[in-house]
Length: 167
Image (cartoon, rainbow, N blue to C red; front, side, top):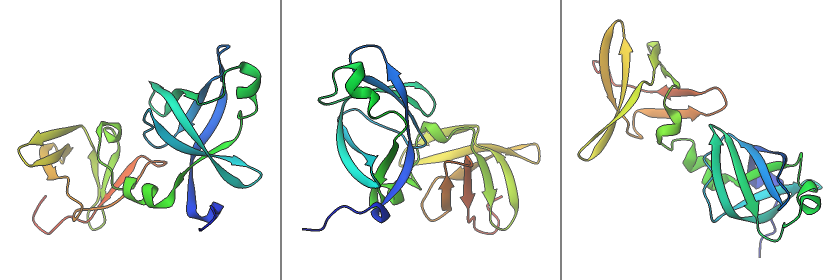
């Protein structure tokens, strides 16, 4: 069985502080977190798995979570300041994850440069389209993996490889 190593993970945030008296924590994360999901928390440069029993988004990139078996403010305090990790295969998948959290990101084509801000995601039968304004015109870009080079959540930027003539 392969042991967990730090090189197999990417940092997605930190445990910011405790909340209340029942062991809840405020997490700051650059990835979307979901209830009933495992996260890895740093202990002596080792990723240790923790199960989130409850997870609620307070603000974009800020979550209130309840970790299994951490039921007091004292026990939860041990996690404050620690890094949060996701396994890298999950993180690689999320680099092109498309959901409403990317609205407002800057769209940059690798050939044309900055196109504009992602204003809205338009759902059409069978596909999603990015809506933006480019040179005072509203344009729609198919949100397909072939056109998305990378989504950089830290820089809030979507890098695109658009075919000639799409814009």
